[in-house]
Structure formats: structure tokens, C-alpha cells
Image (cartoon, rainbow, N blue to C red; front, side):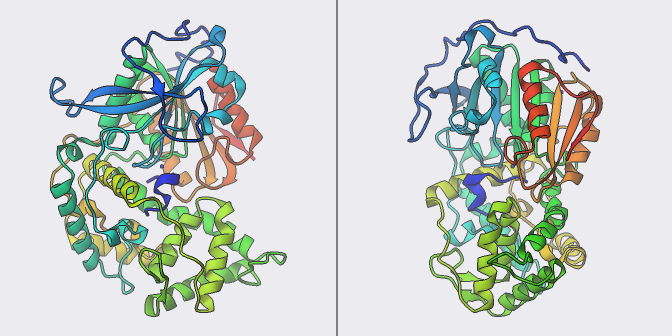
Length: 492
């Protein structure tokens, strides 16, 4: 599973196109008579960014039935003479939006990429300002340590099963019909409706985290509609487990990244030093988490309003997304060891939390059937707690999907090696959310359709974020020219 800024508080296609440089479209406007572009809502946006609404079927099995809105954004290609087409910015999540990304991370793209592509963002179905959904969850169930299924201190999953039922009931009661039509496949079909509305014969894409799965599914369903596809920080595409595999991946992800935190937290010149050696950080953390299981510290303004062992474990998981977060975790650990807490972290408005949680739950639960047996989860949690104590069994536990009232409408899409060889995967070697082990499974599934750039870096999201010139230049060259390495590349 993936995670971007909006839901960090809650809890991210054979060689047909290589070397092809002739524009797919030659008009800067790309024939968009059906779209009414207007000024986007919000502040701090690039004045060139405009928004429009695309009408899509709520239920693709009944395409002439009820329509819903998907709001999209665009900053046009900066050099009409070299314009190639549209670059879809596919967000992470599920529950993330790229609506403001043309003004944000899109402006970090090299000039030749921005010259050649309209930058297209969107709010996926269910997520405001597109037609939105809301489960009306209890405030306490919006806590990250509830949305992520941390077992009880003794490892029991009984309370998690009760929580899953309560949340699933709320989504069934309050979510409306749209909740049953939010999934990765429907998002991929929406992307093709956006492509058509833009007047594009083919689209390129930069998908990040969960967006790599969306991009993979799109490339599988609509291979003839893809141009240059970059998948950044890649999800395990296992068609038998899908989101269950993403959750389980956190076990290895934490183990991949924790040594980097331990090395940083034991450096002699670190003002927030936790231990004299890197080896000493792990037992210190585990001991503190166990103590907080027994003796939580009140934390006014937080959700929940206490620092308990699972809140600390969830904070560790969140922290390992980026080394820039290491100091905040160290300060929290130092405070908790002294029996205090820092000020409670700020949270997004509850309306945003409710919306993101609902879209996330619907996608995860509609993509694949989850087991309903508490015994099956308990067995997995017991095994995980022994092998991976830092994550205490959470990655194999029961989410809201264990009690989801409706089965998936179709089997998950199997990602295969059939289709054009126009995919470039880029992946950090140490990534807590989308670990390298899962990314390699996607690489194997795609076969000759893809090559992979592995970057010697720590954190979630690889392209243009960590300053690795080799990785960044390889991806940028592909987006700008279509030139792709002949084989997989390791960037030190």
C-alpha cells in the first residue's frame, strides 16, 4: 500500500515505442472541445493550471447509466512546436489526489519533458472535488493505529475484527452506491475516459506508489493506448492477494529501512542520539513500545489521546517513509522515555480524513476478497510477530475488508508480459511502503515490457526526490526522448 501527504495523517507496457520521436499529436490544444477549462479552486497554484470535469459511468457494466464527475487539471506543454502529448500524473494512495501536481511536483520535471507534455492531474473517483464518498466513521476509527490493523499488545486480533465490522457497517450505511464502484479497474477505465476527453490517441504516465498498480492495470487493459510509462516505487502485483500483499510488504519494508534509522540515531554528533551503537537502537525501541503497551502516556489533542505502543509503532512506520522525518521520531522516543510527549501532531480536517479513508477502504476491499476468518488472521499475526517484531503482526492482520459486505465485482487484473515494451520502473533500494522485494515481482511479471532502474537510496518515491543523478537522468531521458536502457540498471 501506498501513502502520500494527504493520507499520511490517516493512518502509494515489445519494443514498439523505443526510439520513437515523432509527435503523436501536433496541436498544442490536442482537440479538447468537450472540456470546459476553468480556473482551479485553491491557493498557491501555478496560474497556468486549469481544471475541467470529465463525466464517467459510475458502473462500467452499465455505461449508459448514472454518470459521476472526475475533476482533472492541466498545465499545457510549454513548447507547442515540440509537444508530444499528455503525461498523466497518477497519484498514490489509494486515497491520494494528483489534482495539484501539475503545479507541484510536475514543475520539478526537466524543461524538455515539460516542453513535450501537457501535465495532467486528477482527483480519482470518490475523492473530492470529484463525486465524493464518506463512510461517516467514528472519530477514533480515523486514527492511523485503527486504520492500520495493529493487534492488541498480547497479539490478539479479536478487537481488530470488531473494528473491521464496525467500519464496514458504517461504509455500507453511509457510503452510498458509489462505494461499490471504486476500485483500481474503475480508476484505470476512468483514465481512458480522460484520455479520450483530452483528444489523445495515447498517453504517457508517471505513476507513484499505488499509482504504479493503477498504471500497470491501465497498461494491461489498454496497451495500445500507452506511450511512455514510468512506474515509481512499485507495488507487488500478486493477483491472488493485491492489497493484502501491499500490507504484508511492510514487514520487509521496515526491516529494509530501520538499519538506516538506527545508524543515524546512533551517530556521535547527533543531538537526538538514542544509543551508542546502531545495534542498540532496536532493543531500545522494542523495550519502549512494550512499556507503552502497559503504561500509555496521555497525549491531549492526538488521536487517540495517548501515546501507546501501537501509536509508537505506527509513528515508526510513518517516519521510515523519509529520512527527513528521523529527527521527529527520535525526539518522540526521547520524550516518551522521560514520561512526556511533544505537542500533538496537526491533522487534516476531519472531512478530508473521512473522504480519504472511504476511498482507501473501498479500493482495497473491492479489488480482492479478503478472508473473513479471525483464525486465519490470528495465525498470520502470530507468525509475523515472531519474525518481524518491529511491526508486531500488523501487516498480516484484518483490515476493514475482513468484514466488507459485498464481494469484488471481478477478479483482479493479472499483470503480464503481453504488450508494448514501453515501461520503465524506478525503485529505491530501501523503501518501507513499496519494498524492493515487491517491485521485483512486478518487474518479473512485466517481463520484456519493462526495464528497471534500482536506486541506492532510502525512502518512499524515487524519481526527482533523492538527488540521485543516475536514476533521475535515466527516467527524464526516457520521458523526453523515449530512450530507455537496454537492460536493468543499478544507480549507486
